[in-house]
Structure formats: structure tokens, C-alpha cells
Image (cartoon, rainbow, N blue to C red; front, side):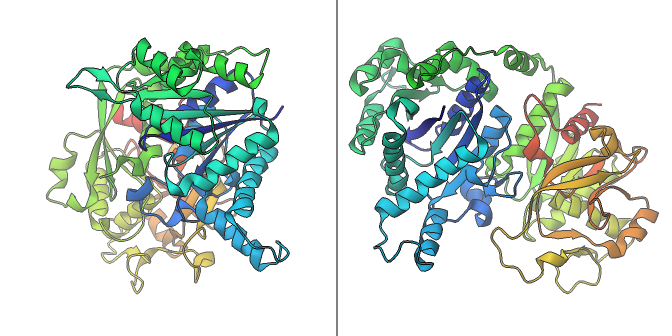
Length: 531
């Protein structure tokens, strides 16, 4: 069995195609099917790795080190499968591959064209992902909005692929906005009709229409969409905005979306089992009270820049039993004078990853405040490096301590460029993906993981300088995680006597957190904030 589901979007972007695709993946997985997910992005960047977080939010990193779109995070969290480098494809990567093949003579002197060479490259990538994973069903989301010129090669490719694999093995889902006009107190179906007509003009007839709205769409509007878009009434699914995104699979199931998908694809003898997922949602709503945690970063104007961090905190809150309220703090605003006012109502501070020197001194001030006031602190990637710099300055007395990233000529660069990163160009060149970490006994790290060896995902090119390792350990900094050969420092902390939770990790634990499997470090951090 080889089945494909293609998810397209209409009217406007940002409708939640990714959540729809991920939720459907969860439903099909709970029917016993093996699922894989894929995102095809029309922008010309080879990958989002060098893009500003303000453009597309966070860069999500897979186990095998691919820098990908943030929607892959949604897929992993919902379907609980580790995705790969074949899970995200951009127009830039497509044209890069095609032009390299042309330069290498692989087209045997042919004139290289959008059709068939570009579309074939896209189709090969889709098929490669399914072959690599052995999935029963591949769910493929097409980024952008129908009508965008950038998306047309992808839409043409999936149209062709549907013919090649057979329409019985292929399903098109179109996610459209159904706007509500408050002045006239009515929903408008015309934008959806026009979007479907646009898609049909490209040779694609949607089998299922997912109608997005902030309010429940009345039956008569759904029937109207069914009539004018030529789909069965039960193939118009309402996707209403919910307080918790993990409720979406349940909402879609209540409308029998997974039944309709299986019927249309000829998938028989499966029955969804949602008891565990429903139990998860019950835990979410069982939380009482709230705990406020400060997230100190340089990209806080766009919250999606830290999407996986936010979700990992939420997952941990399901265990802790309290809602996490995030206080978004621009690191530029933190000074020794402002810190008490900024953090006075916070139970903890989390400092995520980032690049460049803007806001660094504010981050150091935040870390110092946490250490001196016994406030739980969790530093991730750059956040760990900030912890080391702050400790070197204010405990060791190295007042000019810094990172080589921020001061190339500095005397005391306690964070330095990794040997393997010297002279490399930007773009897919960092220490990326899954690496092992040896955990020291009798540490907070070991308490959280209950394991001597773990694996976590990385995205960095600067590292703890071993030149200062002995000094820092003698001053009380605990090195709780290293590479198996002990050459690279992966995690540092202070003893629980000094602070209930004061830790920095060089890796990105947020990428592996799942709603049904909260990441252990986030759980311990949130628990310490709740005390």
C-alpha cells in the first residue's frame, strides 16, 4: 500500500495547514498506519538555516541534521515520528539539484525546463521520502497559497504524481479561510469557492475541503461549499480555532475526517483508538493555577521564533499540573537596574538559542540575576554559553570573559569556535543533528534523564573552551554532560544547594519534546519553578 495525501492552502497564508496535516497524521497513526510527513516550501532559499527568525520563525532541526521549516516540529509532536532531511524541500533546493545535474551532464544535453526537469525533481523527492520511511501514508503539505506563482511547480508536480500513482492512491485536501463578517453577522463562502476554482484551473480537484474559521461554521454554509466546490457534504470539514491545538485531532475525528480519508483512499479494516490522546487533553485541562516564566531572547517580537521552546514548556506543564505563562522579554531591555522589576514576578528564566551579539549583555544580566537570586535558570545553546560567560565574569573574576563570536580578539574567550568550524562558510555547516552525550552521576542532568548516555539535537558552531574547564570546576561549576570522549562540554549546572535548577545545555532538547512524552529537562525546570 502506497498512499499520498497532499495538503494545499487557499485565500490567505497562516491558516494552520501544518496543524491540520499533523492532526490527520495523528488520527491515521492511531488507526495503526505508518505515517510520514513532508513540507514543500516555495521560497528560493536552499533551506531556512540562514533566514532571520523574523521571516519564518524558528529553524527546526531533524535527527539527521537538516535545518527545516517549523511545521516539521508540529508533525513530529503530533505523529511522534522522527523526520529526516527528506521531510522538507524548498524551491532553492530543487533548482540547486537540477542545475548541478545539468552541469554534470546528467540530462544528456537536453534543454532543461520547468516541465519535466523541475517537476520530476520534486516528484522524486516525494517518492524518496516514502521509500526511505516505508510509510503507508505520506502527508505532503504545499507551502504558500494557491495562486502564488512560486507554488506552481509544486502543484504541477503533485498533479502529475497523482496520475502516476493512481487517483485511488492519492487524496487532495484544500484548507481555506471562511471569513466571518461581524457587521452583517454572516460567514462568506465566496473566497473558498474562488480558491477551489483556482486550484481546479491547475488541474487539481480537491477531495476534501477544510474550512478554517474562528467560529463554528453553520451547516448551511458547509452545504453551500459542498455544492459549489463539487465535493460530498461529509468532505467539508470545519476546523474551528480551539484553546488548545492538541484538541484538533479530536475535533476532526468527531466530524469523521479520518473515516472519510480512509474511505476515499480505500484503506479498510482500521479503527481509530484515541483514548490515550483524549487522556492527554484531559491532563491539559486539569491544570490549576499558573506559573510565570520569563523567556529572554532577541527575537521575541515574533513568538514563532521560539515555537518548540514554548511547546516544550507546555508539555512540561501537563506533568507539573500548572499552566505556564510566558513573559516575553527583549534581552536589550535587561540591565542590572531593570532586572529586579522585570523578573520580580517570575518563577524562572529560560534563555534560548540565537546568533549575533545584539542583546548579549542583557542576557548576561538576566543570568546573573537568576544566579544571585536563586531563581531557576535554563540556558539552551546560546543560553548555556551565556551562563558560562556570566560565571567566568562574576565568579572567576574574568571581567572581560566573552565568546569568540562576539569578540574575536578577546583575551578570555571562554566560549570559542569549534576546531572543525574554522574557515567554513555559513549555511548548513554547523554542528547539526543528533549527537550522544555522557551524563555525570549525581547531577541534575542524571536525575532528569535517569541515564548515563543520552542523544540530543544540536545547532551551533561555538563551544565551551576547555582551557578554562579546570578553573570553572574548582569554582563550583559542575560539568554534568560531555561528549563520550569527554572533549566537548555539553551541559553545565550549579549544585541544587546553590540553586534548585541552574543549568545550561549546548544542545536543543526542545526539538524532541512531545505532548505525550515531555522532555525531561523541561519537566524538571518547570517543576522547580512551581515550588
